[in-house]
Length: 341
Image 1 (cartoon, rainbow, N blue to C red):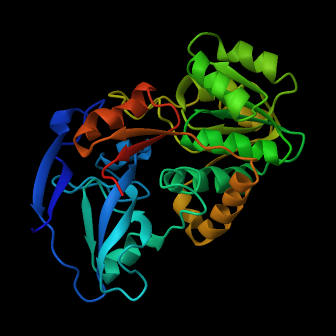
Image 2: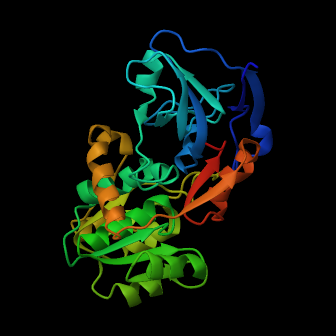
């Protein structure tokens, strides 16, 4: 029986939070791979805040998803048919598979999608979308290369219980830093401290971030890894030390704004403290991913590193599941399960 591929396509540019009507659910027959091609059964997809930016028209670090195109997403899956020299049926692979059940790639598309084998002895499928995947690489290289933490310094990370934040904090602890997280809700804060080993966590939903920073960062902030932007970024800027490094990874608090993005009003703190604020995009370190994967996998084996994934089942739940990110309802790395192995 011929395979049918179910897909989620962008139907309209969202205004504010994406709605189900912004998506079209389509189906089409699955073709066979041509010379050098690969057919992948998609098992799990990574849902990330950056996806909201990819829906917008305008200049960015990556072209927007076109109206009518299958929504862009990274994923993990299993090769079901191949005429590619590197990939064989049964291989577990990762890459840019998009929001669909099957991904058919020719040789050129396989290269552009970053198709690569994954070793389940190093981590589970969901860990390959979390600590061993794009969020982990974002955190690892963004912190170490751009944040440049030194032992004894204080590192603050927002979105601390999320995919990037949990890795940032654990890497900073391994490097000998004092680590303070910012997260929403007592359960997430307890997880960050008791499970991940942060020194403290500030609950922005129940108290003052400014007061929390005064309490838990009495000697100021040396590195701030920002995943949320907005008021929290502005508040942290009032507590930075001389020569502090602020890593701009994301601004999830601003992604669904229908008004202009709110920039930091306290930016002159950068001048006074001779501090540096720098944006990061994970693709800049693509040639070094194996280095990051190897190190984090070793820490996992040694029991020094934990990862938490929030897995939601079903391709048809994609619109509502994606919005969990922007409503703060996910606990850990958000993963959409498309199919069983």
